Every structure is written in C-alpha cells, then in structure tokens.
Image 1 (cartoon, rainbow, N blue to C red):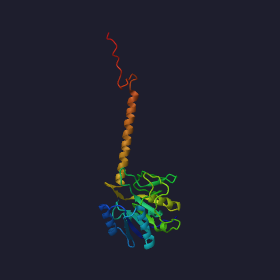
Image 2: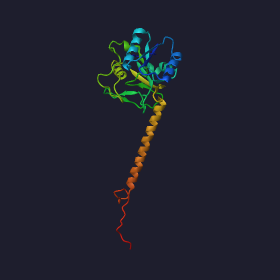
Image 3: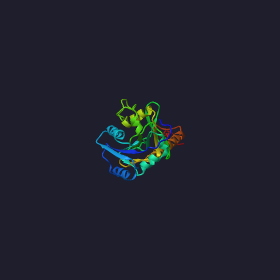
Image 4: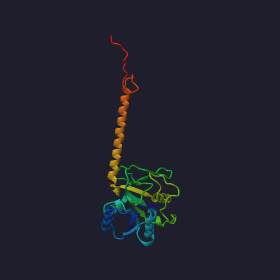
Length: 261
C-alpha cells in the first residue's frame, strides 16, 4: 500500500507463550531483551491462551497501550541470536513490506520451509527455497518471528479479531490457521508480505530445525531420488539385455530332453 520503503520504527517485542517455553528459547528471549533492542522498543507477553487469542491480545496491546510502530511476534520455541531482530529490522529489502518474516521451518521432520506462495486459487503451496540470499514477496507467513506494521491493525476495514480460524478451510501442507487467514485478509486489502533468507531463525523441536537442517534434508532427498533413478535405469538396461529364451522363474530355460550324440 505504501509507495516508498519505510523502516519499522519502534517495535513491540511480543512473545506468545501458548506452549511450555523451551529452556534454550527462554535464553534467546532474555538475550534479545538485554542486548538486541533499540531505545523506544517495548516488550509484552501472553501465556495460557490459544495461539489466535494470544496473537489478538498482543495486537491490542500494540494499538491500545503503546506508541510502537510495529510488532514482532515471537513463539516460545524460537531459536535466534541476540542480533536477529536488529538484522531483520535494518534489512532494507524488508522495508518494502507490511509483514516480514526471516527464514524459518516447521518443528517436525521432515522440515518444511514456512515460505508460502499463491497458486491463484486462494490456496497456499510450500516453496522449496534454496537461494541463501533472497528476499521476495510471498503469500503467507507464520508468527514464529514475524514483523507486522501498526497500520494493519489500525485499518478499519480489517475487523477485529484480526487473527481467526478460517470459516472455510485454507489448504496448505497442514491445515488452515489463524496466521494464514490473517495473511489472506491483509493481502486482499493491499498489504504486502515478504520473507528473506538473509536472516534466519531456528525452530526448536527434538533438535533446532533451521536453514542448515532444511538444506541438508533437500540434498539428501535429491540424492535418494538420483540414486533411485540410476538404480531403476540400470535395472531397465539389464532387462532389455535378457535373452529371449527366459523361464517363468527368471533364469534361462535348459532343454533336458536332448540326447548326447
């Protein structure tokens, strides 16, 4: 909706504690608050709520009780360095967007990049992003470590509650969710959504899933596909060379009725 790039200004760092907080993620959040914030930034948190209720509560704090220009949603299983917010907010590539997310994957195996593209039918499709230094417009993001501009929540056309579960299923690799329906509604009103691989955030599961894990998974999957194809080609080649006189059990037929001269 904006004609010129715009910095993110003062940021409300908002943590959703909808799950138990992982110890490593707690350390990340503490270090961010102590080392990674700028003057004018504020913090907020909410626990014991459904993800959609928590997201709406934090947005209300942004609009009704703060003078911050943007909100950064953080989930309680995020893995990031103290300077991650600084790198994300200062990345000029992201100033073109109203919603902006670093690279992140889901927390289950196999890892899937939360990099959702539009297939023109109000459905999302996952993109297997491989470029380590790309920023581009996307159709949807999550709330794992994501910036939203204040004007989105102040837009009277976007009725509260802002985050809600879909009335009709939004088809993704998993299911409809409050963050994706928010993305759909924001895009319909002209707001832009971006993602970048220049800044990366991990996702604590059994291990911390992130850029390196995702790329290793893609490489391994590609290698398995290549080896399988090569094996199949070799088997096909062998089958084409089999003598025409072949038995039902896969070995040559032997004439046992002939007599020696």
